[in-house]
Length: 408
Image 1: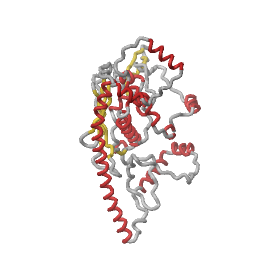
Image 2: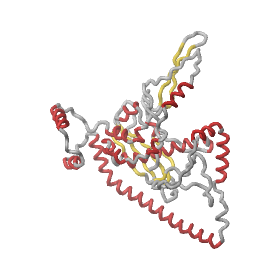
Image 3: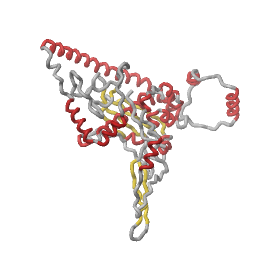
Image 4: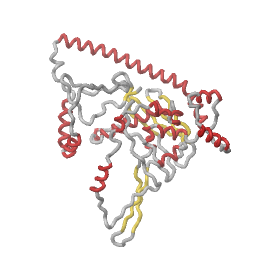
């Protein structure tokens, strides 16, 4: 398993420990669990009041961040004050730790090779699945019986009657399993939040999702499409690259991702929408319609991953890093969850095995009273000489922005 993005900048730098402050935060392993001490109760704080104070004093926030940031990497003097003989013992422990790190790196490399070995065994099963989904093959009786073993066989009389009635109706020919991948994706929470109504028409033409490992650490996701009215691509890929150096614990560290360019057919680009603005000439009083193309939310933005922040993007670095982590997690969800167990996501059975944390729902819902207050207090200033109507010619807008996913 790969680690999430290393050295993610926290909202506020962590204060130094009493003894020693590391120069950098160690990357957290994907297998780590957040520690907690139930016996310690923190003093209740008025978070709303504190947030209000910081919001009204951005200079105060900057000052605090600067002061705390200047403490990172500074020693409290404890280690330096140790007797020479104790310092030698500490150095010896560091030497032992280096040996441990080497073994961890070897372990992760062997795990990767084991994953590749079994992926080669999984591949024929994925190919057979694709043929059945797309109507090229039919499952064998043995495969059907094995799949029916876990289904409930007991039905009430009403259910049996309905089943008999349906059986009497003439069967309509159906090729494969329609909308298999779209249905599976809509049952996977992190992916469902990215799919808009407009996207669904294109994703209905999705015939297969598969992956492949790179020669160096990394993997590629491959989306295959049937002929459709939206783009000419037969396949659209996205590749995730890891850094050459291992992280803390020997795990691979995500570096960046690259996606294919989509060859959109004229007027069918799902990643943009057209805004219409009505303008009136002050002199002639004549009106005209001005159209402007603007970016919009779409699942297909997944193939245009965010770029890592630069020094010039300091103010927006936190937002970019969050988007990078979300982008990485989406790729991992497709690789580790969707592809291996696609039929369980199609039927929804995989949802029973998803571990949902109550924290996942924090901040997802706003109080209605707050929204009403915003509507009452907010007012739009309109120019008498200019009227604007923002219309989406495609008649739909995204459902909501994708929420940040926690690392698994």
